[in-house]
Length: 131
Image: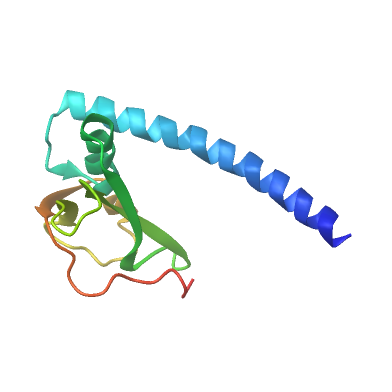
């Protein structure tokens, strides 16, 4: 019985992953199209900055939770960084909002904001464990 439950969870998890993967492909190509419309823009979000670089230049997407940010107070907000290669002297680039807003009702600010580029990670990244 436990094996059947595990198999069903694996099958449903795989189907959910395929749907999420298809959505991620849409996100990647929309970000690439946005980069063609306004090349090297300093407005958008971390995903619109990193996705075109991964497609054009390769490298790695590093995903971590945003510090002190939640979707509707409960869900995590994923932040993505671009890492040129996995080596100690590798280039790391990430976006940081120019004017950080901490209010609850300006939800659109998660998706489109003026940003500056940072090449370092300040402090310790948030853990995924306190969900």
